[in-house]
Length: 387
Ligand SMILES: Cc1ncc(COP(=O)(O)O)c(C=O)c1O
Image 1 (tube, rainbow, N blue to C red):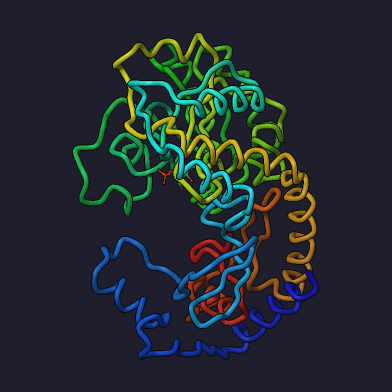
Image 2 (tube, rainbow, N blue to C red):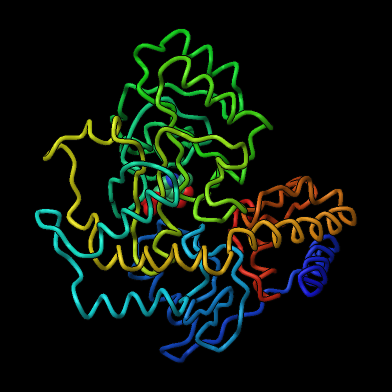
């Protein structure tokens, strides 16, 4: 942690004094970072604007590039690698299952998915699970600033023009409310309650910049959803599986949503796997043939997810995220005291954190520039909000 503090202070100092040193990547060698970046630029859709670090191998929280430079990965694939890169227990489960059986389809049974379903439902306290492979496929009342994925249904809920520009027609049939504003939510429920099936929210908005709602918000949402008979649907894809210092971020307010959506960390970065947890009165509304997924519940993903959950509990990673996060924010706040004109806020829960920068004081540098500079310091963070 001392190294973290020193390096962050260095980064901020060099930005505040206008020094920017982005060293060039090595060229020429076909397995060099620069060559691979060039290939990606030439052949892969430009739907991301990555920080120029090529991941070559990873272990725990560390990543190495092809040149052997080591980085500390604070992003962990937006919570998909909560167990650390290539956790040996997860890799063992992956390899063993890959040699045995990878896909049955749900036209048949397999010997792994029921075992996962039992441990998922026991661990999270729900009666049933619906398996999937990626983020969200649902509708309803949602929050401004939300991010639930990139299907037509969920981009229709987005307030982000970048997500919707050029796509259409967007799906009707949903309403928006400000995240954290329980009064506005109640007003919508009062006006439309009998037509609303569910309220979909992230307990902490991840993509929006780690936005934490006011204390008591989730409890009030729980009460409102029960009062107006609206399903409370928590998208814990980024916040779940220990990342925020609780197994589910909703546990910070001791509430139980009607539906919980998990993804990312469930597959420990090894396979895409997601799941919807709810009780029978909800899950059994879906009849055979009404929903499906070719890879949903596949034995490979199930074996990996069983191992991923075991690692989280056996190694106390949830408690560790709470403790490390506390320490991390304390150190960052000390850095903030030194650079109050640059750092507006340090916030987060567990190891889902953000440093909000004052773009006016940063000019002409941007948050992306800071990430590039942090890369030189062997950190690797998300570019827009520093998460
Ligand atoms: C809260 C949340 N929901 C849904 C998704 C979409 O998940 P996927 O990319 O697996 O579809 C994400 C991805 O970042 C997310 O952060």
